[in-house]
Length: 189
Image 1 (tube, rainbow, N blue to C red):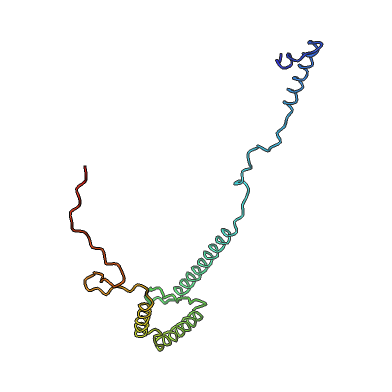
Image 2: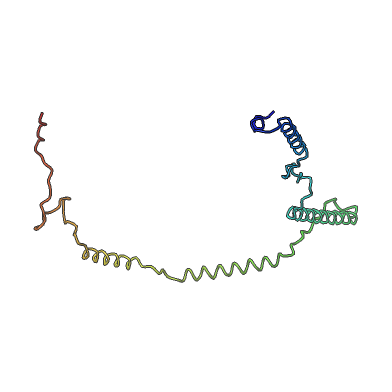
């Protein structure tokens, strides 16, 4: 049956083969009863679960509140128009009355705040116009000249005072190298 077991020496080959068949049957039975130890089921559908989005809910509530407020204002205006039309005399022209514009609750506060900001800006502008400059270009120029003078004094190798871009020969230093004008030697061949 299996080469491994056939190669093993045994006193009774029939009994060894039966024992081997029993082991194989037992192994196959155990394989049938094995359950997985890892959860390999597909995940639950999270979209089916209700999710709460507080920001979206807040925005919807604000939108609904704005719609309700607009509807209430519209109904009030319609009621005012209807009551004013009913009180008109027959001889008066049929002209819709001008609707009085509702003022904001914070209109006065905003106006005061704007005045305060304007006054503060005006004070800052006045202070800026009164103050003089803190930098002087004359002082800067004087300082630059003084620094250049100090730099020239501290230089180890002074720049050559050349008029035509040529360096002058100083005593104690090697003479400047001049380019050769002689023709080059022909190559030896």
